[in-house]
Image 1 (spheres, rainbow, N blue to C red):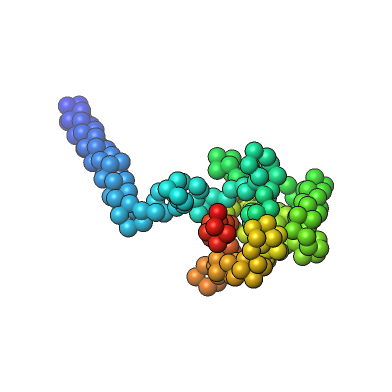
Image 2 (image 1 turned 60 degrees about the horizontal axis):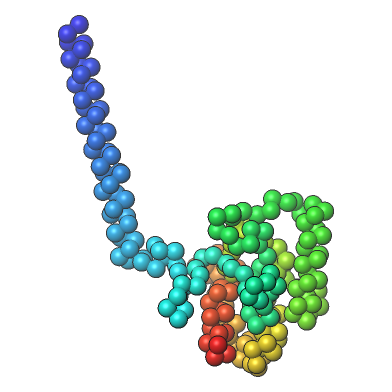
Amino acid sequence: MNNSVANTGRLVWAALRMLLVLTVVTGIVYPLAVTGIAQGLFNDKANGSIVKADGKEIGSELIGQTWNIKGTDKPDPKWFQPRPSNSGYDPLATGSSQLGASDAKLTKTVADTKKAVAAFNGVPESEVPKDAVTGSASAIDPHISPEYARIQVERVAEANGLTERQVAELVEQHTEGRTAGFLGEPHVDVLELNLALKALAGR
């Protein structure tokens, strides 16, 4: 009986020591090491890839945002517009609409959005790309396709007093290829493009 109690006590003490060691290693040492490496080698990415302009934080390379006329929910013709977002680009409310491709509500929304995008940019509906009328799975995608950026060139150039060639070159300069050469599709970061546009227009 005494041996059984003693053995149990040793096992409990060994378990407690292991718990303490693992708590220190995995709960303190490891997180501090990973945080230190991230802050030292990847400071920008570790802190959310924040973008600053004129000394102010204006967004993130990883999260899309709206570019509306101040105080309204209407898109501002001076800026390149992002793809639709059912969450209003709220990073705390990510996720798609979960509606199927044959859903009547989604079909109507896409059709109405295509008409609005075509009219806003002065192009035929046939030239409106898919990403201009559909949201991403996360609802906060900061990128648009080069095709969507290109149909906005004429409007953006006119609204900013620039030539179409100037704005088109800006789009080409900010078009990124597939990740690692084969993953995903070519894309344009709307925030970076609009910041470059702001500088070009002298805003």
